[in-house]
Amino acid sequence: MSAVEIHARHTPGFDERLAGAIDRLTRAAAGHAGRIVQATSLGAEDMVVTDLVARHRLGVAVATLQTGKLHAETLALIPAIRAHYGLDVEIWEPRTEAVVQFVRRHGERAMYESVALRKNCCAIRKLEPLSRMLSERSAWVTGLRREQSAQRSDVPFDEVDDAGRTKFNPLADWSQADVWHYIQTFDVPYNALHDRFFPSIGCEPCTRAIALGEDVRAGRWWWESEGAKECGLHVHPAAEVASPAVTDTRFNPKVPA
Image (cartoon, rainbow, N blue to C red):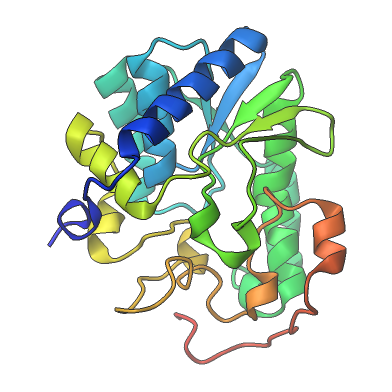
């Protein structure tokens, strides 16, 4: 069965939640004309946001992080977006020398050796290029939802990030059923990995399929304790300090070779 067949269903209040998301995106685009970007992970939620941007002709740029460790199925969405919507997709990559030095010093499998090394890898491959993506922008848009994890249960519709930019989360109140109902209704392109039980998709070494009954983000950094499982893109420094102590987990035989 496909992810659409498994998850998509119309639930009470969907039309109101959709109207709210459109309104929030429209006001965000108008309030930050020419200086707002969608930072898309190319996951299901972000594809919904991109579809809304294109469908309603909103002046929001679309950009993604090419970490150098993404699945082929994820990368395939970049030309798919361009073909389906006629939208350009900005691609932001980590600095080559920083990646080379990190791998030379710690190896290709450093993310499995400790939480600290995994977060260093995320900082090089995600946080630094994101900072460049946002450097000339006054606002950005994400597909974050409160239902995604305990750490995201209080995601607001908009907030001010640590650099003073406005961060908009127009799908904050959407359910998984809402996301897939929208994808089904509007024939939105999506990552083929979602049909293979990958509800949350990041870099290839740090993502696995989940089993029946597991949390939707259980396949991300699955060898780490729950309090560590964010890359830093959506975590305030204060939240990091306040989060539960993380386990400096050493190599786990369940990590893929």
